[in-house]
Image 1 (cartoon, rainbow, N blue to C red):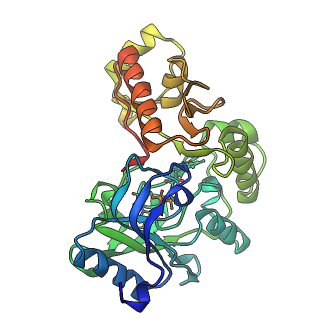
Image 2 (image 1 turned 180 degrees about the vertical axis):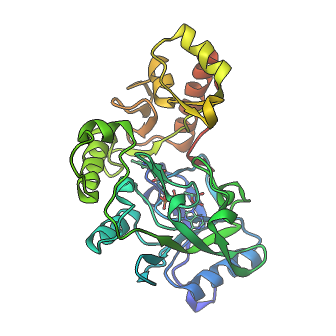
Length: 339
Ligand SMILES: Cc1cc2nc3c(=O)[nH]c(=O)nc-3n(C[C@H](O)[C@H](O)[C@H](O)COP(=O)(O)OP(=O)(O)OC[C@H]3O[C@@H](n4cnc5c(N)ncnc54)[C@H](O)[C@@H]3O)c2cc1C
């Protein structure tokens, strides 16, 4: 490498510090980029050397099962610009939770239910992050990307992003094709939080006027009590998506297990089931397979007890999904990107 701009390029870089699972796999090359010229140089380097490209933010939704033979680009593009009253343009490398804090400090509302989700702003539209009854898609007006196949920058409107539950056009696209550079969000200047999610509805009741600030603190409290901190124990949050089944299938399962929780979708034609409940009922909470395990308080969260390989965690995940398939006839899909 004789290009001065890529002086920070690392070769055979361990990925444990770049992913919250903390598994030790290696990337053939890795670079952190904090400006656009550096990013474009890195993309060119990958193209010239026929290397597969992979973009990471905080690495909180990815599991490397093997070493990555290409170039991993860590996005560090920062900046929060208030374009008009309620419209923000945010660099892809900004920390998501810091953005939530910034919006509340600036009297912009809407993101409070999404507090404490780890990771970056650029990754938020990839799987349409969601929590406590709110998904990011309701705020997205534009996602500004670099298309590495066409070698040019493009804008996607909210409709063009084709958002769905933990999914978007970006998540379905070939790996490394779209690099999110900026996300534009339209927030609200009226403090009217969403309280539809049962845990929040129960906590607040319906009488008083609840503020976004109160919801923010409630969400942070609930999350801290339920989810393991990746800085303490390696994990990537929910490993599987909540499965959606036909109403016939839901009623069949309900006949066998009356406690099965289901949320009706599309006029009751389909039901979203709780993957955590299915795994818990199948006895997975707190179980271990060597150094990989299931969090003791949440059956949907796989953890690295220290020193687990990506393969250890992957094999455990496969065993868990096979047991749910056998017991309930439901195939769980991973939410985490498996590389
Ligand atoms: C404890 C814990 C709790 C969590 N809770 C939730 C939750 O409540 N709701 C939820 O939705 N998720 C949750 N997650 C998952 C995760 O936080 C989100 O998916 C988050 O958006 C990932 O951000 P990241 O920057 O870490 O992405 P990464 O893990 O680095 O990447 C995830 C995906 O996005 C792609 N990507 C990242 N940045 C870019 C970019 N700039 N351009 C193009 N592609 C990019 C990657 O290639 C990869 O496909 C949780 C994770 C943990 C560890």
